[in-house]
Length: 419
Image (cartoon, rainbow, N blue to C red; front, side, top):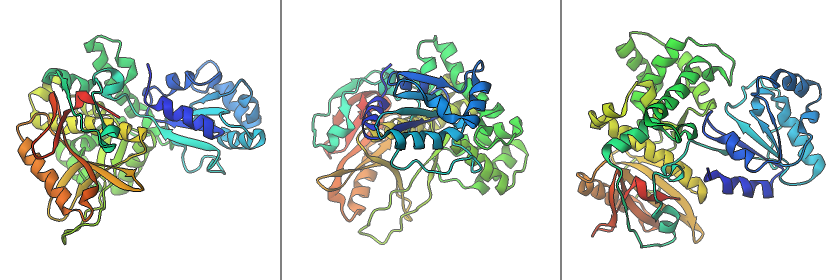
């Protein structure tokens, strides 16, 4: 299936000697890379893995021979290959020579001596957005809004039950062609893989699976907040009756980041008109909302029966899509919170006419709180010293019509969005 990353990969191959596609296992990195490569070596293939790993230490350049672009799948299993690719790119002096995929960032002790800057271009690939999976018709373009497109029309018929299913299913390509019951198991398998072995992929440290599950549950309950490590410790003590010191917690968070299981949304730090102070703490997120649902053993019907929890995971799904969409037109995604308590779920920042242009976004399953959210967005705009750079204010909803309110705030269902 076509992915939004395809265009970025094509551009990178035309401008660099190699491109590295990073992301969680199962998000479609290898399948996507195979559409662009002409030969490949698969380091996670059990039949050839041991021999390839030995060869990577004895003569890594032998593994790089083949038609180009040549794919080195799961290169981090043989970290000697990174410097070999960098050297080969230099020697050949040609673009589009290699593609690498990475499911876990190499540890600090990995034998890598060069960053690859200027030779290897890296990009993060996440699970599929609703636009990629066909659950959004793409009638409203974010890039178009930044370009001044006022044509905001569309309709999404995604019902509450379907939205809950999409949250729990996640954007895993392997789930798309399966019946609903089997599709829901895909995210649970991904979560189980992280618990049993995936979390050790980057640093080689074996961890107690039960402790990993407890920590994932604590992280799931903190998703969408700026919770710190003491908050996680208190949560685990309260819910599971176990203690975890902050140093151990650091290693868990680092390992989950390295395997692209969790991510953090940076704080938006504009110049304000008022004396409010912008908070700089990052927001905790999973790369896909299905991780949180699986960790908490939530089914779609559980979300429908707990709308508060549903709203948190719906927001997480919106942010996943916004992160991917933003990369398509070189935008950055932030969240905003200041000392007065004013918060905005997402702020997109891109360049327009030589200076920053912003889009501010709130998320909500329905439109019952639309007036309140619109007032918050307008207040945010008025608080900025350069509020005129706001290209649009938007409320992302679960379903219904896309339209512009009389106050100028857009209401757009998640099933209508595209980059």
